[in-house]
Length: 246
Length: 116
Image (cartoon, rainbow over all chains, first blue to last red; front, side):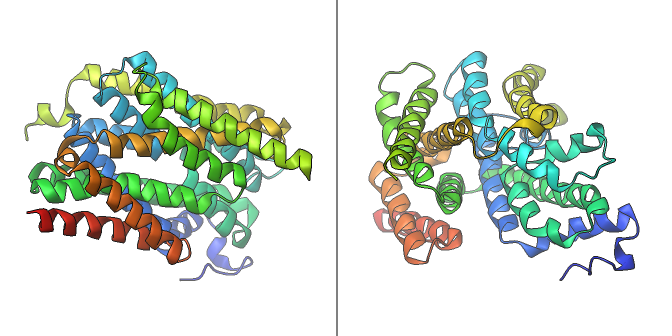
């Protein structure tokens, strides 16, 4: 499926643009990655004793895979609400630069801020990547509708994946249940590694993994935060040092 | 599964709102309100992105090191081996997410089967 040319009558209405956005989810491998990730989140929610409605509500209203996993694993391992909220808040900071960079692609001189609220809610790493790829092929005045369609399509795929993962975890043998839970760390590790273009990103990823077991020995309740801030700051230091030398 | 089981308790949903929904929407709405004035390549955002990546890396490590539920039935060495095998495949296949995930899964399942 190719998107129609910019001057095609196929872009004449908002609903048509929404439909093209919806159909575009079939044009990206990231849809499969999301499906697999959310299959794992559904299974994780089941094995840490959350309800299916809770898992689905977290996908609808949080709509950020890493945050959902941090929330489930920290609450599941006995952290307090405050400790979880802090870890999730820090992990979610990365949404800020994504929203900042993606909304100008959809804005026209007459666009009101409230028209962008839903697009901002839908913004997460997959949508952010796909907007940069698809939006140049979409007429500017139809981009918000297109993004709504694309986002709603991706959310729907993830809700289905959550439900399937939840029931698989409930009914599968232990080995297959373990296989579904392993999907989450694998898909996150490799999709993050793939998105790491700068040295700072690679250092943050590798150090973040290596420092966590050390931080966990402190048993502070915010171990993830301790290792994350330490590894991230060292990674930033490497970035800074390379800039100074260059 | 009954209706009440599917919903779970309201307390858990309240926790989801406080610790999950609010912390994410704050950043999105800040991006919407103040987005215009911030340079995407600024040093602060480089640090923020590095910390966010490292936190995510910590979560990946936590799931593998302190596995939840059924994953705990897989021996330590096999879990670490599966991630390592997936990483090798990912790199060999020129950063293919698909190759990495499939290899990791196959390694874990084959190991479980071999160990009995």
